[in-house]
Length: 120
Image (cartoon, rainbow, N blue to C red; front, side):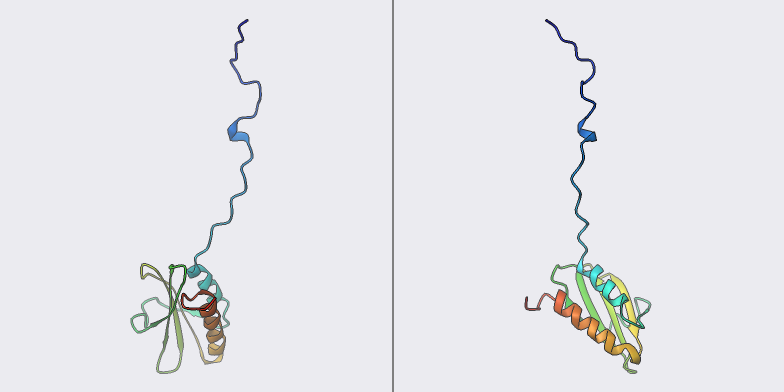
């Protein structure tokens, strides 16, 4: 005859169904490069406007997220900056003479892994 369904017979609704795990957000090369630079021994944060106008682009990130820029002052102190694609500085740092080789190695690795001109 007639069947009245005022309430669903199953207690499970679409809201209660398990959702597939979401993948972690993809980090940009800007974030990855900054993380690597923070691992350099002796890296010291600096004001973003110190020498940024003199720093030259050394690496353009192949994901289009930004660039790494370098400047070496008269005292041979290495300064490194990370800019995003909108030309906003997200990292500025330097190392002294004792750690300049470590910074150079980190920058070489960043260039090898992230540069749009690298051969991979």
